Image (cartoon, rainbow over all chains, first blue to last red; front, side, top):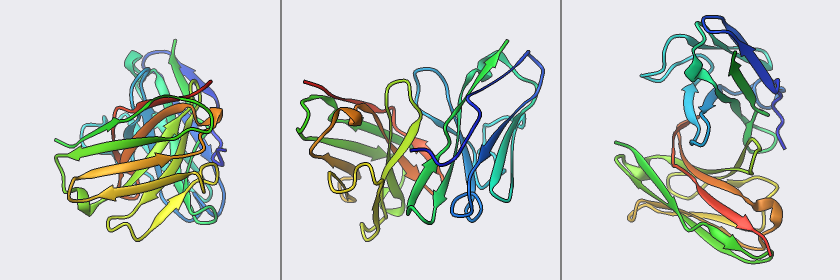
Length: 110
Length: 116
């Protein structure tokens, strides 16, 4: 059962920007760092953002993350067709003593 | 190059058992906490379990607690997941993932199907 809530879908035309929200609580996002993962169709998830807003080497700066209180966001600027994927947020939960993932957001490039 | 390769998946009957393995290479396996994460067909990601570097800290999701056992062999650079009393709802692709406060590398996944 996911305890981090994301919108099921987001979309935009090439070049536009989209933002995905991730809503949690005091025991997860409120007290721990957030990471984001991109899952292209038929592939394993890939780390996109770590420690709220850091990008691994090789991830374009079109992807950015932020966190405020018990919520986090992933922004994608300059949308490209190969950005079509599912995106998940994740954080450690101190109450559950485990990681929790977001419900996932499917991004479509129109 | 960091590589994580899962194996051991397949078709199993409800109530049966299966043992997954994850072979690691390209990094110092004993220096990292490791995790299992699963994804049911058409569904989102679900964290399953983690094991610390020296196996002294182990956690499970409530959905698998008491049925699954995570373990590791640092000499063989391998991670394992013993799955007992399997249920239909355990059907999923199982990924092993390296952890450093986040999951920085993932395996390609292995499919486990629980069905009669």
